[in-house]
Image (tube, rainbow, N blue to C red):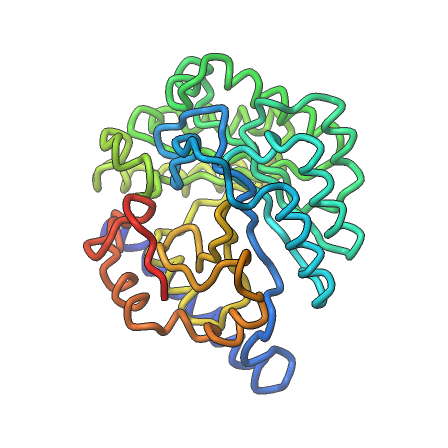
Length: 345
């Protein structure tokens, strides 16, 4: 049994334990059988981006048309959510969400005043002390900055803009100094395999609380850059090396290795719909990793979407997509995520 098979077995066992615990809580009345309203959402606030990353899962920066979800539309949408009971958690992403400027904080204010806790995903380019001072008022589980190498040259080449490593590292350091939990996200490509420990040391030096590390998601712009995917032999090496490094650095940094796309999809499909992704065109997607749309917030009420699609993970098309996902590479023989038209259920 190689390292990939061992990891897949551990991920499957972990998913089963979560499922069993959920069923136990449902049986004792401590957890709902279904959700009539989302408890968490990801807001992809814009398709605009100031970088051109080789692996971008949703091809940010390629769409030149204005986003249908204007900042005013996002504010109106968040007010509707709060009026219906609000959300426990919102992940803010894009594109690059800081490109919204002051409007980003207006959107967050509506949710913050209702008690929502945030996660923020950024490339770090636009961070400065003024922005950080404004972010301090919010409650965060984490702010995530992407650093894909310990080398500024390799990171900048991967991200498509010279100077992006320095901007990201400076942003990360400011966030950690401000006392906000810093999460560094690193996508491992073949040329970074020999530098895994250097990446960990960089994250520690920047004050990160977490390092999320994983292979390229087979989605979006990654299909245009096939050289960035790990081979099976490289993936085995990645898993064996990270297992050793997690033990070595366990007292200095929490290192999280991303689950395989198939494992993530199996986990999501085992539960009732409790959250979703809202895209810059208003579409409500099941998840970043699968191309299914269950409504549009510009025309549909969120409660109506949840009432109609609470069992959508059991839809035959969704199940076919999950079954067609290669358990090792994550590539899908049914359809490619963000490499064609989404499927409307």
